[in-house]
Length: 569
Ligand code: N01
Image (tube, rainbow, N blue to C red; front, side):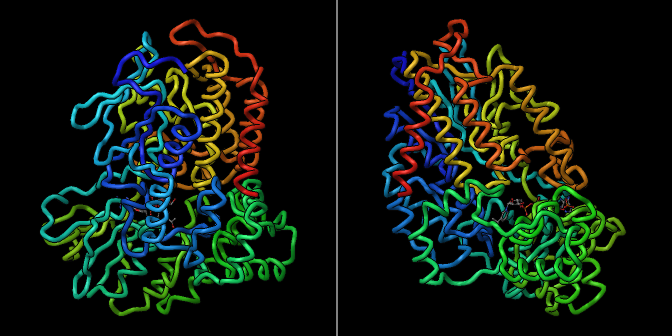
C-alpha cells in the first residue's frame, strides 16, 4: 500500500454502517490491516434496519439465511427467535456484530457524506461531510445501500398537513400510537403491506390509498423450531454453499422447469405447496419459467388472484386488491401475514387512487382528483425509494477529469460487474446497480462484493499498484449484457417497478439489477479474477495504466476460498 501523503489521509473510507459497512470495516481493517474510517448519517449501526422501524417491518428471507456467513462462531452462537425476524431483532444482531468485532471505534455516526471527489494527481478521494469536514482516502467502499433514499413525496401541500406525517423508510424512534386515530397510508409495496397489517390492529380507522395492487403471498412465519435450528447449525456450511449456488441466495431446490409442462392439477398442487411453505417459494421455487414466459406467469398470477378472493369478504374490495395487467414478480413480490384479512375489518377501507389519483394533501387530509377529501390525523407514506442509483448519486460523486457520476449515469447506471464505474477509480459500490444485489440474499451479496474488493486490494498491494478502474469497453459490455438479460425476462412488462427505475418521475427507465442470477454472476467475477482482473485497468498512483499480471491472483482466490471454508467448517 502506498504511504499516506498527508496525516488526515487514510487508506479507505467506508460509507454506511449497515450490513455492508460493518463487514467492510471488519475486512479492510482487521484482515487487510488498512487505516479505515466509516461514516453513517444514522445515530448508530444498522443501515436499513436502523431507519425502517415502522410497525410490521420484518425480513422476508429466512433469518437463518439472511445473516452473515463469514464467521462460524457468530452463526453458531446467534439465536433467531423466529423464522423471519422482525426489525428490532435484526437491529440487535447488527449491534451485536458491531460489539463483537469492535467496529464502532472506526465509525463516525451522525455524519453524512455530501460530496466525493477524485483527485487524479494524488490518486485520492476527498469526502466532504454535511458539516464541511474533509477526509481523504485512497479507496472508497460504498455501503450506502440500495433502498436507503426514500422517494420524495409527490403531493403538493404536504407541508401544510395539520396532522402527523411519517415515512416508513425514515420512521421515528419514539412509539407512534394509532389508537383512536384516523390514519391514511399511501403505498402497497412491501413496506406498506407490512405496515397496513399491523396498523390495522389498533387504528381508529385506517384508509389505504392504493394505486397499483400487488401480488402479496404468505410469509409463513413461526417461532424457531429448536430441532430445525440444531439441524441448520449442524449443516450451516452446506446451507451457505447451496444458498450461494441459488439465483436468490437461498437453499431452495424444488423448482420444476415449466408451469406449462405439467397438468393443471399438478400445477395447483405445486402452487398450494409453495403457498403453504411460505417465503419466496411460490415465486422462486415453483416453476423456473415464471419470470420468463408470460403464459407460465399467467398461471401463477391467476392462482394468486383466486387466493386473494378467498380471503377478502367483500368481492368488490377483492377485485380492487387483485392485480391485473402486469406479470407476477415484475414488481418485487411482498410477503405478508394476514394482510388481506385486514380489509375484512370494519375499521379498514380501501381507496383506488389509480382511477382517482391523489391531487393534493390538504391541512385536513388527502384530496383526490374528483374533489373527494379524506380526513386524517396521521398520514403514512410507504411510497418507496429512489432505488439502487439514488444512494450513490446522493453522495455527489465526481470522478476523473471532473466527470460527475450524475452525468455518467444520465441515461441510467453504467457499471462493470455492478461494482465499479469507468472514470471513478477506487470507488467500490457494494451491491451496486447492475449487480444481483436486491435479487440475491443481501448479506451474502454484500459478503461476495466485499470479498471481491478485498482481494482486488490485496492484488494491488502485491503488485505494487494502488489504482483500479474498469475500462470503458468492459463497462459498455456489462451494461449491454445486463440489458440483454432483462429483455429475456418479463421485467420490462411492469409499468411501475422500481427494478426498472419506473417508480421515480424523471428517472431513466433502465434495469437496475443483474438478472442472470447469483451463481452466474459469481462465476463471472471468479473468471475476471482468474484472468488477471480482466476488464480492469490497474496502475500505480497517477502513472499511466500498467498491464496487469495475474501472478498472485490465483493465490488470493485460493486464500479467500480457504478463509471461507474455515469460517464455514
Ligand atoms: O416501496 P415500493 P416499498 N401515488 O416502491 C405507491 C424492500 N423492502 O418501500 O406501484 C400513489 O415497493 C406505489 O404505487 P405504484 C423491498 O425490496 C423489503 O414498499 O407506483 N401511490 C407502491 O404501491 C421492496 O420492494 C421488505 O403504483 C404511490 C408504493 O407506493 C423495497 O424495499 C420490507 C405514489 C411503493 O412501493 C421497496 O418497498 C419493505 C403516488 N404518487 C421493503 N408513489 C422486507 O420484507 C408511490 N406510490 C424485507
